[in-house]
Length: 125
Image (tube, rainbow, N blue to C red; front, top):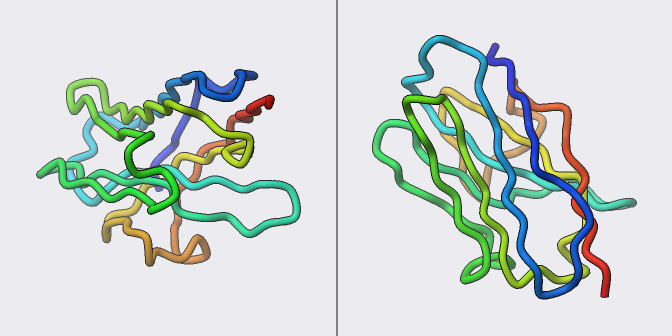
C-alpha cells in the first residue's frame, strides 16, 4: 500500500485557480496510476482525473475538461492537479488515490486501496 500526502487546498473565489500536490511516499512508484477524486457534502466520492505513471496517459472527468490538468513528476513521485476557472460546484474534499491496476472514470472508490487524507477546496461565488 502506498502512502499519499496531499497539499494545496484552500479557499478561492470563483474563476480562480489552485494547484493540488500529492506525494507518494515510496522510493519508486513505477506502476499503475495516480489520480484525484472528490467528495462534496452529501454526495458520493467521484472521479476527477488520473495519470498513468509510466506512459503519462491522462483521464479527466467531463465536468472538469478544459479547466483542470493533471501532471506528474516521476523523480519526485508527485502528481499535480492544476485547477483553473473554478466554480462553486468544484467545492469538495479532494482525495489523492493510487492504484497498481490503473485509474479511469469508471474506477470505483471501493476498489482503490491507497488514499490520501484529503484536502479541502472551497470556491466562493
